[in-house]
Length: 168
Image (cartoon, rainbow, N blue to C red; front, side, top):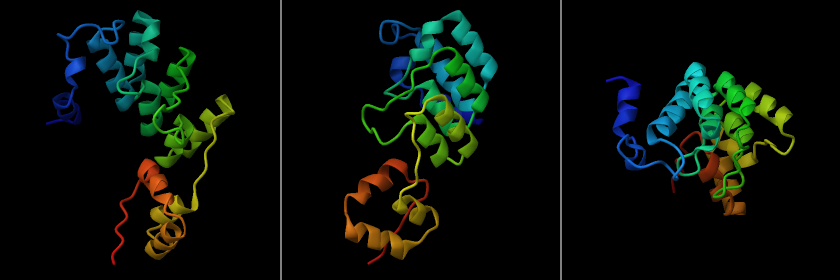
């Protein structure tokens, strides 16, 4: 089974082809195809979908936009295409610590994060001490940081790339 076939198995009910328009605006098939194209880096499909319906650039599924997906996956050409079509800068209403530049950085796409930061000065990126300790598997340092300030647990949950197991 290919990755796309596996992904098709988890297609949300709301984005099944037979469902009514997503948010009363877009074909569920078009929204799904745009999200898949952003995930796979298929810039031609992104371009074709947006030429068909330019407002589709504002589609998302549960606050996850094509721009956010493309930044996370490091697909610079897709990111640029979405921005040319005036994609929103994707401020997350649930977690304001993350923005598309930070997401790109967190997933190892530093050049893309720099590009995004140059496009929008309000997008700041930084690694907190807890993130660096987690990335470097410095368990004692993580333990110390958490013992000093338990609010750092929230920082791990929103941005962790590596699992941290602290014992005893």
